[in-house]
Length: 364
Image 1 (cartoon, rainbow, N blue to C red):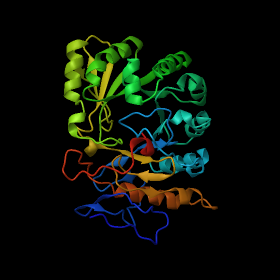
Image 2: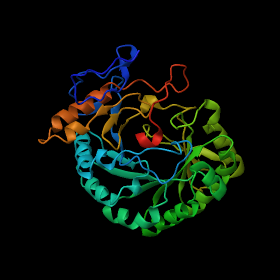
Image 3: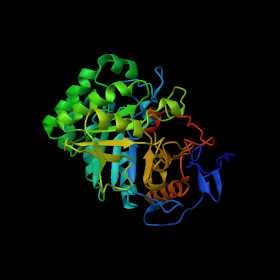
């Protein structure tokens, strides 16, 4: 059973990150955690990777991510760029060295390049990346590059305009392709193309996407469909990694695992035998990688989550908006959230509980 949050702790939201405290999954975040120089959980996993959502708004309505009709948060509820930068600076002081900006769609947040410039200057941060649907990328690629961004992930599930509209409930394929072209022109070389693997859809698109990415030097990454969208989900909806790899190996070129990749990276990487690039597979369903997870999340309105599938959250915004800065209290909050992290999400177990939030509200 989930234990209710204490009403005496204003920093902790009414729903608190779940974790394995002792032996019971579902116990609340502890009131204290080891005062370590790094963010470590009870399983010895050191957390160095932070995903920051800058908005819950999006200009698409992808079926696997969000409902078609949605009420977004008032903009006054979202963290300011200065608050995000301060949070990142505190996290960097605890060993976080990688940050990824997400949404919603991050490029709908006005002047996002200003935040990029602020984060590039944070001491200890060595890697900053952005995940975008690409619809607004053509207009913003140059400003993002000039601000110091060097890595992009662009979501693209299909090259077919009809299926693009079916999946995203909007038109815009031509704008995404223009965004990829613009990013290449201004200098981006580390571009990954993300495709959610949907059974009954991706079988038609995997090979064309693979050939498209090989021709342009992009790394294609398939993400198994997960129970985080608005629609009902079961495991049969996901087109799984082994099936995708077999399809590409048969229809495009043989694939072999890449040696020496980051053991904490969510994607398993493969190289084409003919030297035509790489493919990654994020197999959260068929090959859970929880044992090596080093990620935590900050939502657009300031909630801290220790897992994409966490059922509860801790609220950092009150600390960020205090008249007098209290970075020590914020660092303590981060330590406690990470310390409470559960062993794994249990997607393949009867114990799995789908989060209340959909992907657009958590951060991709």
